[in-house]
Length: 308
Image 1 (cartoon, rainbow, N blue to C red):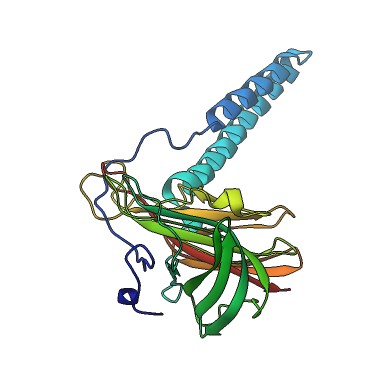
Image 2: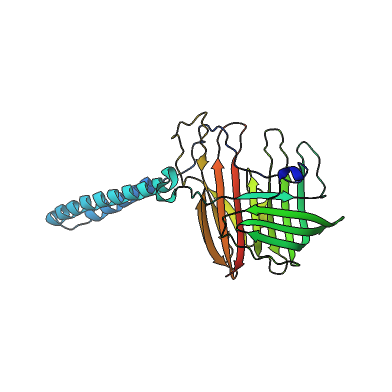
């Protein structure tokens, strides 16, 4: 990774996870419909008992009905517990962070123009040629020459740090499409950036990275891939009465491909899936949600692909 001091402030932002105080989360994040299901089961069982032809049969049916009601109630209670475990307390899906699952994202936009305003930003949707692409034990550097409108052959360099066995398939001289975004810190808004690099001929995502307070804008350029947040997989660190705490909620991302495969990865984990003849490697280093006033979430993730 090149030192951040080698580039202008707007040109290279090397972002790491930011902790901020968190407060009580918004209510109503999850719903539970098992109580309705249970009531429907009890009514059906009672109606069955009422239609038996004689007293003895009715008594037997009534006994069976009670047993059925109990079983239905137990089943629904089990279902409810399972649902609550998955959505409210995390349960088995809230795995611990893997200490080797780390990632960093940085972009050197070179001479690409900055959009002035209350909050400075850079937005790129360019056709590019790969000058060089290197990967040394997970330290990835991709040098590009990019053109968009009056910007012609502007040098832009992408930097990614991922686990040492993270693989990419980007060739020198390859024609690619780059969508990238950076925003400077504004009023109650933190700085951040993201990029998506795709093969020009197939549209396959070759490499993408986010170091930002949201995934805003990524899905619009992701092509066959979609990434969405998934909340409720891990418990709130301080229960339901959080206030003025430095501990955020760990959330997850769901990566979905148009061909069907998908994967859900909670904060601090990694996974793979196959689609479009390629193997995708997704690394979610940070996925933290904050509820406090004037603070923001923080996401750091990268995804790359190689031929399957």
